[in-house]
Image (cartoon, rainbow, N blue to C red; front, side):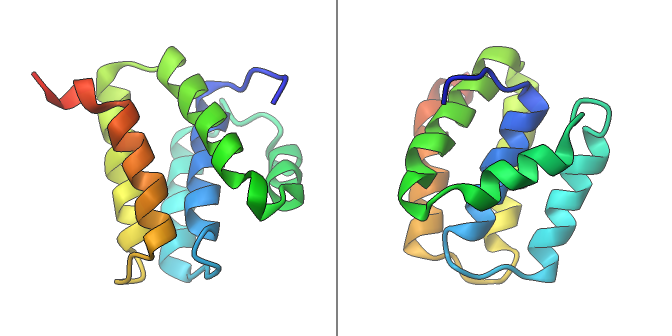
Length: 120
């Protein structure tokens, strides 16, 4: 990815990928993503464009794009914002009461990358 994403956009991209990696999307996941969007409405300036980017992303590229978004979010966020995002991401993948191996893999990437946040 060549462009820098805002923190809000990076978070949106990560949530959308987390919701898509298991091949299923349900209303509870949609509600969590909509909540994130409402909380970050002012910062999500081109939502249609961001939806198009995610929709056009081949599933094989999810991991690389997720990692890029994760790093962009980290650089621009506080510890509290990262912890809040981790909570939201955890609720998202558990929303359908079933955590797939791929969802678990992506969530573990977040926890492993931001692990020092929990050492204090």
